[in-house]
Image (tube, rainbow, N blue to C red; front, side):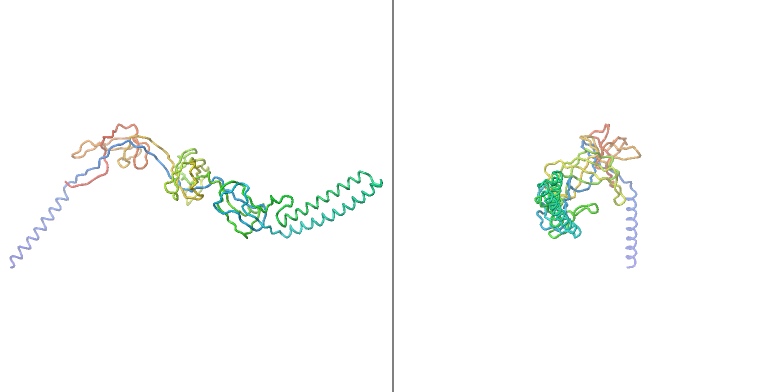
Length: 367
């Protein structure tokens, strides 16, 4: 029994030794390195950059009241189309006590002046008719009486404006009617009936009653990094895609590039405005997020190779041309590159053909 056990033990030791030897032998064999083979092809290459931004109307007008008061009626809501001159809201005037008191006092003074001028005129008229007063005096007092009438009428009209915001002589054009100054679409109505509004003055911008814009004249407003701003210029064509509009692809032309940078989280960017030239922009809304693709460089139907097969050393670029297949052998060849889109790169003044085999990615296999 002991003899059988010893034999079995030696067999196990021998198996382990042989297995270790075979493993080491296999690992010591040289590995054959093979490569994927790639050929040049004719491609159209575009180097692009993408600007992020949003859609904005060229002119967005804030409609403000010409008098302070309280909104008594709102005639429009967001999305409505309005013409220049259309009524947007009506205002009920709440007179300011100091102005009201001053206007009332002016009426009283004007009434006193009118009564005084009337008495003077009638006295002069009686004397003039009896030949006791000159015609010059009569005409002077008559003119003074007429001026007093006008001053009283103006004082009363001013009192009406202070109380009601409407001139008695021009009720249709009263300041209590807030009218649109442009033709377009109402973007926002930030006030409601009962809201207090104030007119614009030296110390206050005034209350915005509505925002109106021409939605047929739209801009893409985005940002470009300072490293790429010199690569774009006014007049360049761009393509606009809007995430909220499926399949959107709008043409636009760069109109303006800001001359000064703005700091955003430590990065300098420049504002870019591009005018949408498509007629079909009715689906767009102000504030939509959008991307603008700008073609920085383009090469049409040129010989190109995948970017991954090019090796760069300093300012030089190289590819490896297949010379032998079994085993694979390659010859280093210097090339001159042009436009690259990150996937393919243009070959400039190269004698490489579409049937030329180039070294690509590495594949490793045992013999």
